[in-house]
Length: 246
Image: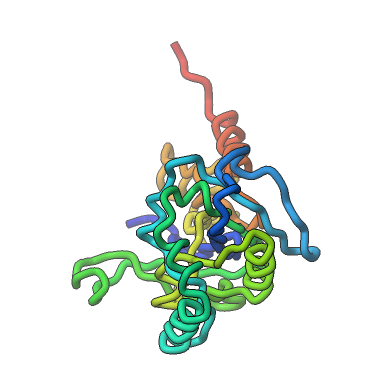
């Protein structure tokens, strides 16, 4: 009950877009190599990283749908159907390829631009009228939409090079809801309880001995995969804890 009123605020992502390019070429094996081996900077705040998944990682097949940008569900479904109609053979091969990881490259497009949400506990239809998490836009800049034009263009150009087609998370095509692999914030560092949930030592205001040292404490969008940032912050927080006394 004594948690800061800022709990759940300033939830952010890397302002990313994840688009899969699935090739019909059988001579390519896109699962070989390190997970992320290169970065292409497209402007001062944006870049794209080609991401590989290991051989046999095909579970994502159940979660994806054709990449079909549009403002409404009707527009998105129309574009998805048009993509099938324009090249049914290639689309069917992409949907039924034996090993999705071997035939797909994930293009992870990220930006360092800010945009935040607030998470609150609410009851509603989506939570079966039980108390659950709900999101709402924060004042100021909004997170990116489900479809970022530059990311779409890059993915389409890559698809042309490898005789492929573009797919994304089904929730984006059906609901227009953007996806993220890097959720951050919600228990951010602040100078006092009115400005954050934890102090500079990661200790929760009002609860001595309780610490938040994961991505929830990150107070800005680094614009890149945050794993090393989270690790560095956690190591620093641990270094500030008093040594155990015998």
